[in-house]
View (cartoon, rainbow, N blue to C red):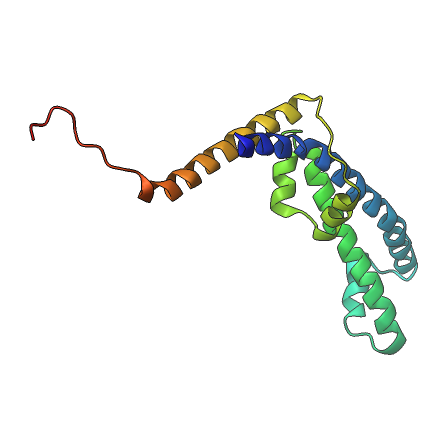
Length: 163
């Protein structure tokens, strides 16, 4: 029962964690967006698209190589995070925690966990995840303790047998 209650508590935190994760993710995308826009505008002045400029950066040397590497990393990160944010925004409230569990960005998850404060959920999805956590850990605990206790059970003789 203690495991099941712990599962209910842990599961109920998924929507709150998801919200903070998305806020952190949105902040990082917003931070990178002006840099990428500036890069796009600067290379457009010379008749380049973003991809053409990045392709040319691959053969750059010296100082240009260092500048290109920084911009290339920032643009790559922006594209990955933007796609991840869009995927989460398009998902339902119930599916967002599942998507984060499948494809989270480790640095964002760590950052969120550093500031995350558990709270009692007052939403339907929080309640659903609480029930899921309760059932999941109840089942896991029952199976685990059943398997561990199996060798120590006494076998009963079938009733109605003549000795």
